[in-house]
Image (cartoon, rainbow, N blue to C red):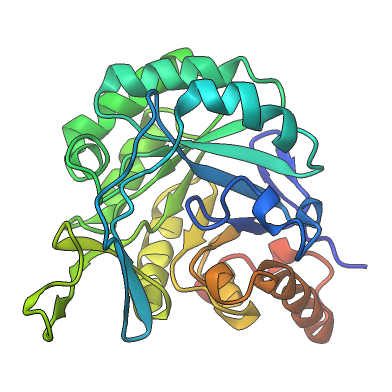
Length: 304
């Protein structure tokens, strides 16, 4: 028997495998493939105050060892979530977390207030790092003062667990992790996608309607791993690693570098069962190495 659980403050997760926002819908899309409740948690698709249509097509393109997307936070808004989605997701026996986004600080605060009232949502992931919207998103996540202001405002009115999702599109991500911790974040998740672009040589036009988009997949894993390692050494709150995790070995690299948990994103597009396979692989690894608790290997490389 291996203990796979981890905690964000007094909020316990049964295991460290969480699905990344924007890649797992509302969970029900995967019900035919896996038992969603077996996961440590799911982070629901990005939600805003008002419905958003997202960016014009084309808004996804495959790249070498990854993909670019500029979906633009398409969703039906918080009213729809409360009326239609909430009753479904609250039945999962796992931690259900909602990713919130806004154009202004007031948007973030209003969303956090709404989610605060939802009993079965124990945490929010504050997305201040989305590179695919013209307002909000990365505007907050790449300016230290703006990041501090939005985190402080949300923390002041939100009573449950606050996870801040950090942007890699900065000079020093450690600075933003420290700001998050100073302003009351209970955990940080990193990284969001890297800003990139592609050109269609046949049409001689940008491959995305927005020209630039967010790069995800295996291509970003070395960058994400380095940033997780840096941040885990600099803050005392749990770090959730994201970026190019395609299998259990990838996930274990992040945990050994200091992540308490990981998020599976792009890999779910390729194999809808991959999150469960990663979970099983982590457990097998611990057993093979003789570890009884996953906490024994979190940040292991820093203790050598």
